[in-house]
Amino acid sequence: LAKTTQPISMDSYEGQEVNITCSHNNIATNDYITWYQQFPSQGPRFIIQGYKTKVTNEVASLFIPADRKSSTLSLPRVSLSDTAVYYCLVGVRGSGNTPLVFGKGTRLSVIA
Amino acid sequence: DSGVTQTPKHLITATGQRVTLRCSPRSGDLSVYWYQQSLDQGLQFLIQYYNGEERAKGNILERFSAQQFPDLHSELNLSSLELGDSALYFCASSEGKGNALNTEAFFGQGTRLTVV
Image (cartoon, chains in turn brown, cyan):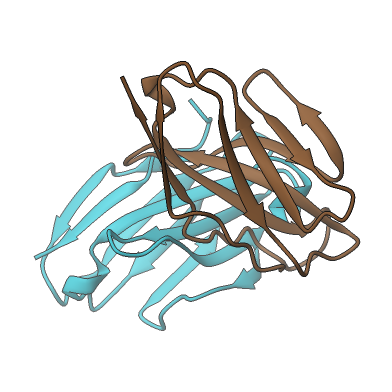
């Protein structure tokens, strides 16, 4: 799996847009980019997945530049309840024995 | 509610003992994954099963073992427990047999194991 690098932590005020960038310089052609969210003492929850350009759902947007060596998770107008750890994962979609491997993630703290 | 059920939610046991953690995957999901999360560590992948067969192995100690039964529920057995085994143990399930990145992986609420 491609190695990923994310900031360890970020702070934001309520109502702001938060962008978390993940670097994955050795991403392979077949790799997809997936983000998970984890609240304290809960299991991670899938947020969004993409391959290139932009993907948007009801929770977040994922921006992937043309070279795909990085990606940015964008959370619009965060609230206190968005305080969590966010994980970026890169791997091959639909492949064989490559399980979901998590890094350290980015700890987002939303302040009132 | 992810649809993945883990029991028990909390477990306190003494060093040297053996415990069994249970996971019921979402209906229809054939893959089950086990993870360990300690306070000072991230999510560590332990092992994956697909339709009853071991699919992938991560950083699982020899004192730990797992299996997936015909009804697709899975159990993680931890033996000769040490203080350092205290952690949150998560189970996840997905419909696919390979990398869970091909579809969403759904995580349970975890079992908090405390070894005293």
